[in-house]
Image (cartoon, rainbow, N blue to C red):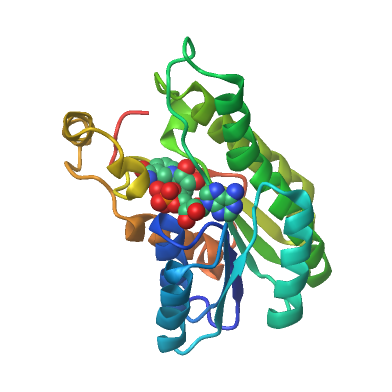
Length: 248
Ligand code: NAI
């Protein structure tokens, strides 16, 4: 299939995990891929090689998505190299889990800065490119925890709920310019982020999921491909859970 042929996708935080699967999944559908992460490392190089093997243009950029200044610079470089950005996937994110009782100001600020401000930074800069092109699809990676909350993740869930409010507002702001903005709310996805959890916690999560398994990064990537493609051309301002029917 070539659902994204002729489109340029920009994915933040794609060296590993869900972002990497999104970059590869979109490339398999024919998109050219620009991706960012904090540093260029072996993961960046191996992803670039995998993208090249798929016969599309793919390049990694070092950029701290939480810095507005760095975001402006990297988007400028990407547009100079790729010509435009048709699909923006705001994926970069971190966790600093702890109960509010023990949560430091730094743990709160880190979550808001990385998970929420990155979405503001990239959307604000990339919207200028999309406004000019009079088309675009913005996909923000939220979380079921942003929909439902979770004990021990007040900072993370506040940042992810903030993404949902932002998504719905931007969909209303730029809809008349043929730019769509949606959020995905993944459930329990097996990556390094969830790999840090103790085995018993992980097993308890999986037992509570009606589909009886953790999701894969590819499960999230497939939803992203749909939202980036013209198959979803009348879908905007929505939150789609990718969670195996877990209770939210
Ligand atoms: P991960 O930790 O495996 O990968 C995150 C990537 O983002 C890493 O490559 C990291 O270097 C990069 N990154 C972190 N801060 C950055 C910054 N300031 N600038 C640029 N890049 C940065 O995480 P995973 O699991 O792949 O998560 C990806 C997204 O999906 C995150 O937004 C996460 O909150 C979200 N998510 C993950 C779920 C899961 O179960 N794994 C569930 C729901 C949402």
